[in-house]
Length: 316
Image 1 (tube, rainbow, N blue to C red):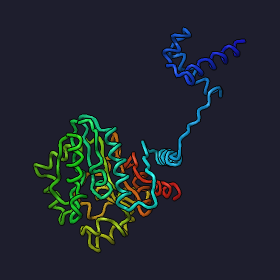
Image 2 (image 1 turned 30 degrees about the horizontal axis):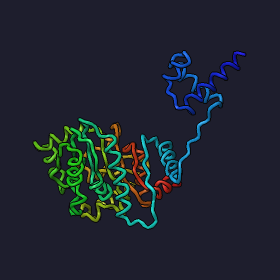
Image 3 (image 1 turned 180 degrees about the vertical axis):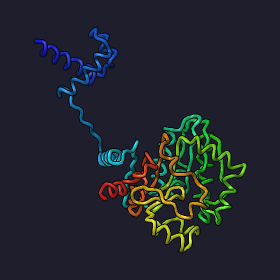
Image 4 (image 1 turned 30 degrees about the vertical axis):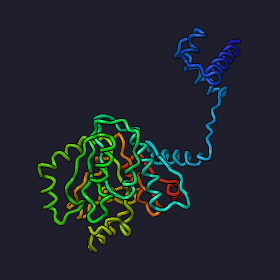
């Protein structure tokens, strides 16, 4: 009789909670049972199979499944996947990812956060995507110097300015290229008075938003004129598969230490590993090995990409 009474009570509580929409506090008051007991009994009802939960969606089910698989496979805090549309241009694909990035920042940025950005066309897709934002007393800072001859709309300072302006936060700039000609020049920049503030912000970074560069054979760094044949040969010899903030890594996410590192004005990637949010924004099948390397290296704990790229990652 005891088991039957327990089962009857479990069914009653489950119906009150799931079918009638009553809160656990209201059920406890009506039945004269402690609220903590209600929580334990709801859990027991699920364990005994009295309650089974089926999550039903719509045509987005496939997207949710991809996000779940990516989160579990690569131990991500979150994966955000946007649908891939066959007729979308490369620019439209980047805009869709930029919109998802903007929505995430609207959700997570808080007062006193320090939010850092890299540069590139995918991150630039966020510009103009912010609306109805709660203003935040936060700092927004570049994580790497500028991209040489790249279009100014992709420049890290442009991205930082626009996002900071949307949030009403404080903007900081880096007045230097990502890669300079000599190690001594880089050292002078990093030791300069104005750069001390940048270094302090990097030490207190809470959120990073970065792009993920493709393998060196097609890297943006080549067409922006930073590298000559010797640098490219060295990176290929070392097994470079991708880059974040002009720092290179291999297929397993191991950091590489080419000579060019000594001329790079950028945050060290190890600083990204323990952040509250380190967000990687990237798409294209070509970048799949680079994205996997970034996740294996734990340089990002959130991935924003599209359906096509997510499927390729999981099938690789």
